[in-house]
Image (cartoon, rainbow, N blue to C red; front, side):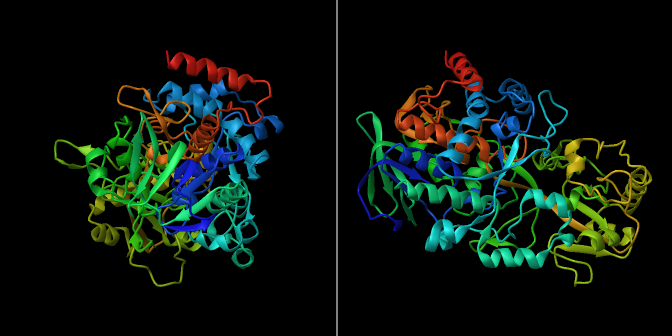
Length: 565
């Protein structure tokens, strides 16, 4: 174990395992209330999956939206997340995530100094469900100077290597081929960071300002349970860290533990982009003392390609977004046919990759491929590849559709017919087969400067043609330790285990099998981290203990009371 801040101690009020956004929110909240806190990170780098994420937060009825005149309410949002979770979300967790989200947001802004940008036109993922909106619930971190925030500690924050730009700027610039790369290089040189790295940096700086100690290479192995409560943590080194008041497990998912993933997930996970340290450590620690587990078959699913990228020396997947959503691209299955709306949100699209052909005892849609033509490559590029460069190994090239079909192993006549049908409607801005381009979400990720009527649709006409294989991937698992609406871990009988809290991907997702919108990972997990910190400190959820409860707080109390009867 290596301390980055503070000197080694054997006892703290609060021990936090993990250093992602949920962990740091819990740590900073408890430390702000006067508790002594230590953050123990298993890896040598801080930030976990949060640091390599988009950094967005999905917060319904947030104060930024109210100030902008946007009409929303926790009740409307609850209708939406109930529909998104397909009846599998526990009411207690839904209420906690939705109705306390803005309270958390206000706290981290006013008390911890975290800064966000309000995205007024970023649509919810499921526009077809009751309670959805076409903007106002998603925020992203502002650009931050990481060295100013953290000094020498900046080198210890995990990076995903992306350039420092905001989603607002992405909207203005469009495709990556139009980005001002010289300007972005200059930003990076000056120490500006964005997205998840910016969020983690601001939360880490706040934790340190409030007196939290931070250590890396500190892998928790077992919880110390004594006198009817959790009293500390034993590390894999044999060292024991005692906790006077609470241990918070925030160690991430179990996606990198192949045995756990294969035995619990509903579908085979072929690749992931999270840190390889997400091996289910916290889940196993909690199970050893009788913690209840829920929702372990789920993950933050996403269609990915394997391009040779690595993280901590291990191969990872690359999320496909514009590559399948931009006009002039389609996705075909093992039969050379389209099988879904390519522009829909990644979580739902990935579920189409999991379908099984029972009569033939094989996968229904995989292997699957994104198909584009030369004009698409010239307009947008594909991932990091640009027209005129040697074709990378992860791209399959064919002079004609027939040649490409032979190389990817699909019937040529099907692929040709699929492209011809798609083209005939794309030039009209229509997709009668899968309704691509009909929702605000689809159009958001298209190209507003597209020459064709619909920003999501365009024909594939100019050879050579290219194929990019798509596999079932995930940002991380999102099921595991069951908690109540204040992040207290529950035992197998539903009774809170004294002194033990859990937040983040190590826990059962508030939204169960659903994904409401951009930031629906970080929004609820930071909210639960905040609630954990406040509960440990014995303080009410409101950031100002003397403040009058608002409508959201009253609704939360009512729903929580009903859910726990």
